[in-house]
Image (cartoon, rainbow, N blue to C red; front, top):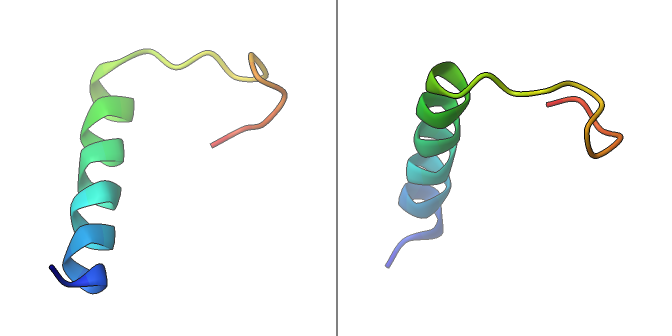
Length: 32
């Protein structure tokens, strides 16, 4: 397992999820 690949997959996953799910800003007190 390579940390670089893991980080890339994580970033891609987050981007896809955030682009599909209407994220509420300020819900947890932090904006992504």
